[in-house]
Amino acid sequence: MDIFEGTPKEKFFDIIFNANRNLVEENLEELVFNFITLTKICEQNGIDISSPSAVLIESLDDMEDAINDYYIEFTSNVLSNNE
Image 1 (cartoon, rainbow, N blue to C red):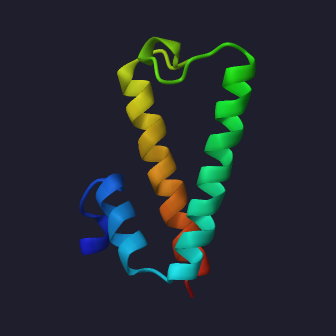
Image 2 (cartoon, rainbow, N blue to C red):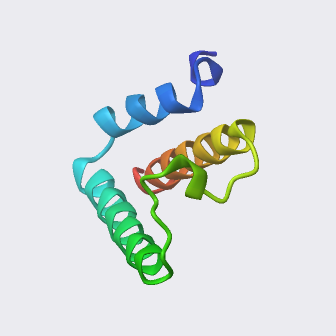
């Protein structure tokens, strides 16, 4: 089946460009809110998130896994509310 083909990132973009716009907006707003919150927390604790060495991920594989997990979670949230 076509739904099982492609990377989590590719499926993410397929979904956000074709799902209900309001649902995608809600999820993107939550993402931005969380990003700003985490950025502020990092700034308060002297962590420069623009520096790759500051990221608390043990390896690039761990980072890639975390990114893919987020794509899957975001996609799942949009799909489950898009009915």
